[in-house]
Image (cartoon, rainbow over all chains, first blue to last red):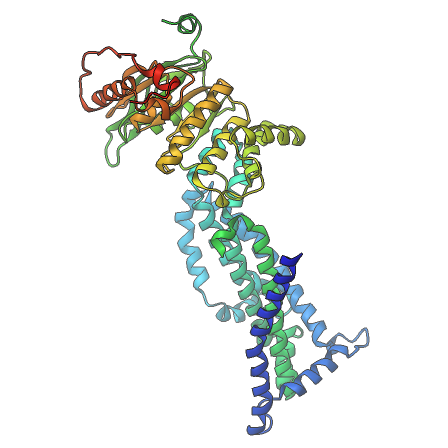
Length: 270
Length: 288
C-alpha cells in the first residue's frame, strides 16, 4: 500500500515538473501575441474558447458539409485505420515471407522495395489523385503507401535475424513449421515489428493530414485548410493543437501496448 | 567387469553410432571437408558419456546429428536399434548458451516441449512443479530469463530438456558460459539429477576435467576428420561429486591420459589407474 502511494506521488511529481515548460510556453504565447500585428497569431485563451464552441456545436443530421472538427476527425481516423490495417496485413505477410521461407527472393526484391520506399510520399500524392480521385480511396492508398514500407522492412529484418540457437532448440523438441513460426519467429520478431508500427503510425498521420490539405472535401487536413481560407485564426491554430494532441494520445496508447507486449524485454528497454 | 556392464554387453546399446560421417562443401571448390568421418561409439542405457576434443573437431556436428537436426552423409545412428529420422522427443538437448526463449517465463520455457507433445494444461503445471523442484528453482516460475543469473538460466534449460521425459539427454557444452564456481556447482547438480532420473547422457565439452569428472566413459575425439581416437573408462566410484574426486590421484591419472591422447597422434601405452585413494577421498574427506 505504502509503495503504491509513493509510486502515485512520484508520478504526480513528474507530471507537474513536465507540465511547467508547457504552461510557461502557453503563458508566453498569450502574453507575446500582444506585441505582434493583428491577424498573425491568435492567443491561446481565444483559441480554447473557439475550440470549445466548435466541440459542442451541433450539426443538423443530413448536413455533412458542415461537420464539426470531431466529425472531420472521425473521417480522417477512418481513412487512416483502413490504410494502416491494409499496410499491416500486407507488410507483415510479405515481411515474414521474405525474412523466412522466401529468403532467396529477398535479394531480388529488396533493392526494388528500397527504391519504392525512398520515393517522396508527398510527390506521389498528385499521382495517386489521378489514379484514385480525391476521395477516401486515394487517402487510404496514400496512408497504405506510407505505412507499408516501415512495417515490411522491420518485419523482414527482425524475422531474418531470428536467433539460430532458439530455432535449433525448438526444432530439437520436434516443433512443427507452424509451431516454429508462432512459437519462435513471431515472438522474436515482435520488438522490430513494434518499431515498424511506431514509424508507420507517425507517417500515416503525417500523410493523411498532408493529403487532405492538398486535395479533399472532408477530414482534419481539409478542415485545417478551410480555416486558413476563411481566415479563422482561432480555429486554425486550434486545429494544429488538436492534431498534436491526437498524436500524443496515439503515441501513449501505442507505448502502453508495446510495453505490455514486450514485458520480457523490460531490462533492455529501460 | 562389473555385473551391470556384463548385462549391458549382452543387450542392445541405447545409442549405436556406426561409421558416421558428415561432410560440408568447401567454398569455391568441389573438395569436401569432413567434419566427422567414420565415427564409431556405442552407449549403454543409463550411461553418462562425455565427448571431449579440441575446438573444431566436429563435436557440435555430432550433436546435431544425434538430435536429428542434420542428416549424416554416411553411416548411421541407432537409438534402441532403430535409425533416427529427425528430431524427436526421445532425445532432449541442452544447448550452449542456454537458448531459452526470452519472451517466456521459466514456467512457459519448461512447458515448450510439453506443448509440442500435446500434454494437457493441468498435467503441464504438475510436470513444471516437479522439474522446477528438481533443478531447485522454486519461486522463480514466473520470472523471465533476463531476471535470472547464468547458472539459473542453465538450470531452466536442463529442466526444459527433461520435462518431456526424453530417454537420452544430449548436452552441448552447457557450462561453457558460466563462471568457474557456478560451473562446479552445476556439474554436481547435473550428476545428482542424472542419478535421480537415470537418463542416458551424452555430454560434449572441451574441458578435460569436466569430461573426466562427470563421465562413466570419455570419448576422446581427434580433429580433421573428427573421429573417436579412444574411449576411456573412468571408473571413479558413484555416487560422485566432481568437487570430491577432482583432487584424487586417479582423477589426475585419467585426465593426464586424456590430455596425452589429445596432444599426441599415437596413444601412449596404457598405464594402470592406481585406484587407491578415491574411496577415502569421497568418504573420509581425506583430500590429498
